[in-house]
Amino acid sequence: MSDPAARRLLWYLFAGSKGGENRIKIINLLQDTPLNINRMAEVLNLDYKAVQHHVDVLQKNNLVSRMGEKYGIMYFVSNYLESNMDTFKEIVNKINKSKSI
Image (cartoon, rainbow, N blue to C red; front, top):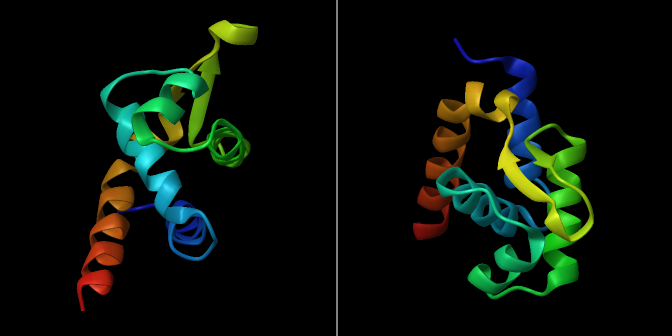
């Protein structure tokens, strides 16, 4: 059974607000390996400041966590998101299906 509060939060951050597509890309990237903002920007071919903004939003909503200081900060998928990963994947699938219609 999924957490209803988590479901609402994920719908809002990934489907109901501007930038959801980039946030999905960031989460998908961080599922594979922890990265710093500079490397995320390079891999995703996005502006550093845009990635920084989206990571801040994700961190404030407890979906990513960080370790390190200054330029050594690495970001990870949070334990909270990991425990709700099935809901995240379900929402992403629904978003992708709605785009293909």
